[in-house]
Length: 162
Image 1 (cartoon, rainbow, N blue to C red):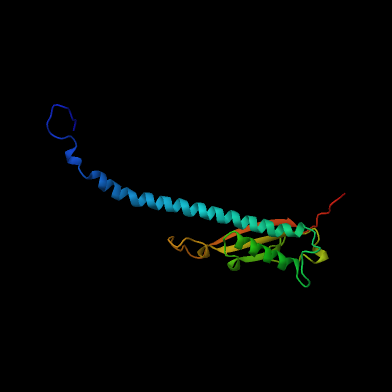
Image 2: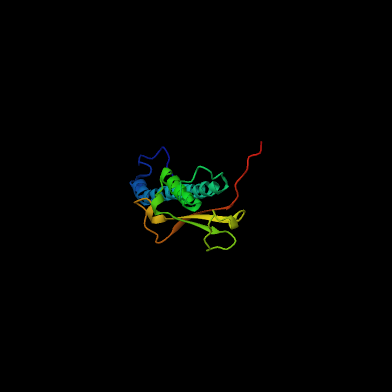
């Protein structure tokens, strides 16, 4: 209906209250979209934290090992402890993470990085964290989904040349 200034009838009278109804329909959808974006960005950040934790733990294999290991401690144990500490410092539950160190060329086969036979071998450090342990309380539980961060490094100590 076209409104003109000559009519005495109020323009838009038949649409009275429609804005409230439209908002009541659209608001829940907007709220769901905003919470979904927040959760997706948290998920992306947690994935990056897992990748950084795996990379920092694997970087230990390229460092000079003299003085960083306590007596009786293996390099694998030190790497796992450092990854857990990194996750805890990042706000993720390091105690719930599953951390594995495997031969990169033979997946599923554990590798001992202190063994001289494994010098210059590629290894893979994987960090798996259940999504249920880090999800927001208001998000539904999607089931057994793991967040995974993986780094592949070479077991070699870098040497400083003077």
